[in-house]
Length: 84
Image 1: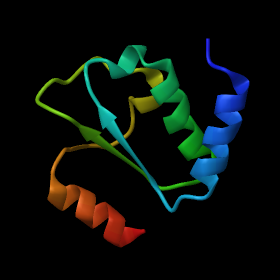
Image 2: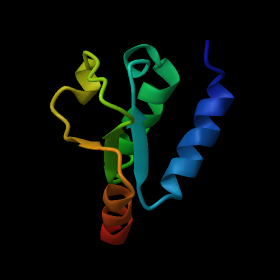
Image 3: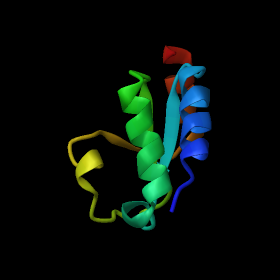
């Protein structure tokens, strides 16, 4: 189980960020910590860029179902950062 102190520290860090990037893989649907961090980014009204790490396209959890997920590339990362 996740330590609530970790969540508090994580939320504080996300609040201090201009945006959040998340790498989506076959492990993401079961990655409770990662999904919590992504939800935290949305809750804090931060721009979130989701990127598939490879050609795998796992069944997505409800949190990500209607979200745009980019293909990993340095060009996509650069464009996201330049929009912040």
